[in-house]
Image 1: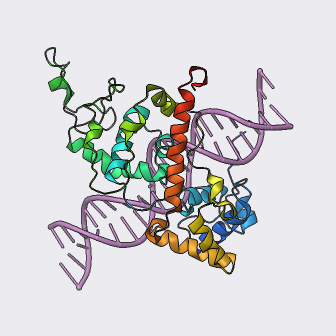
Image 2: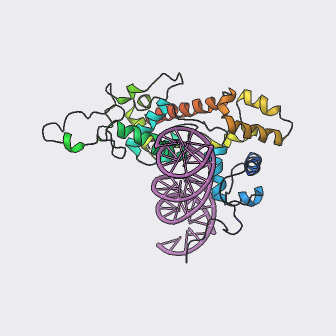
Image 3: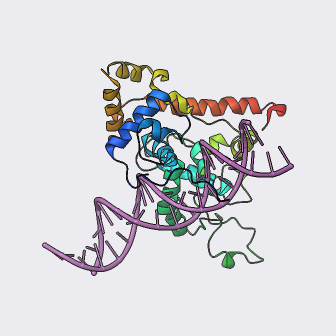
Length: 273
DNA sequence: AAAACCCGCAACCGCCCGACG
DNA sequence: TCGTCGGGCGGTTGCGGGTTT
């Protein structure tokens, strides 16, 4: 007995989403929250697979998403996390508020991989390329010529020689310093754990629950859900941060606060993950 | 100006895993 | 304990836009 398809293939639309479909999906999620994705297409009046709806929402329509290229610091964080976690994009994405696994995966494949290769680093193992040359009896203990990543095996040695020091601060954005996150060994193990709560409470995107003051006042100004949805769709075009709304930064900050809080929790031995 | 090529990203596919009856 | 189901994940594809020839 074969596996049941995730949705009825007949009559299911594929390909790029139209603005109208986005509209319907946003409308539905904002009204009902995220529930059973399989039921979403029917309830929302979409001829789409439930999976497709979930992907569209999580990768594109979610209001807390950052748009645009990853900053230097984000990129560095991705590299470091990849060195530790491998291709576990969702885990990596969980450390970068506002970024999706798909986005990070794409960025990795199209940008970071090339950068690392250019720097002489194997993007898979994070060890120096041309290892054969360096891996001789005489110099295999010498530090690898790595300018940007931690080399596997010495991952705990995030000391002053950490490549994170190379993180650019030119962007002027608040830095998400991986080093700072890894100062505490317990936190590090927590970071590598699989059971931590998500950094961002997805249901907080439901407009009625959004607690950022400035967005509340804006939402309150909408005459109808249609206006609200239109605002959201416009936001997708430009990136919500382009509007100068800081509420999503607040979400990010609260995520980092969560990290710190949990760090303190886990400093108690019996609460380690 | 047009064709060929390249690149980036959105979306799809299929597998895996946990929850639940 | 087993089977089913839904959600999630990672790999891959295909399209559209940009660049080069």
